[in-house]
Length: 116
Image 1: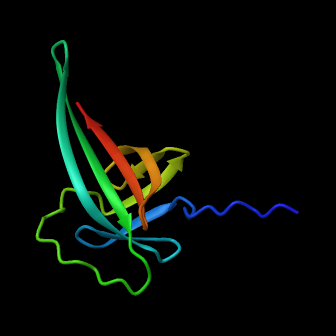
Image 2: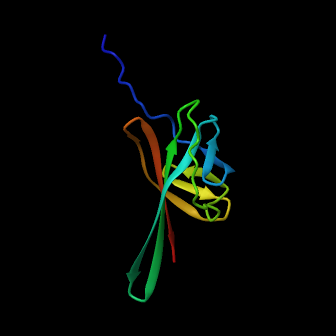
């Protein structure tokens, strides 16, 4: 009998609720921290768009939450998985799931918001 393949990724969080600025907890009590925020701009004719990309890393149990001096108060207080790759935020914005992967020992989510 063949052994089942091991999938290191957990299920996608359905809810991500802010417990502190830049720190979220999901419905399985897993803790996710904002590891990086990127903004970029693009133009299409007269239309200018701003893209905001958020990298979230899942902490392993008993891992100390690192101090982060950045202010993430512009991020939503809650994200809810609306479809397979769209998160709805409490501020009415929709964020596209770009990636759910393993980065070394760290599970990561990458979400992108397009404004404009």
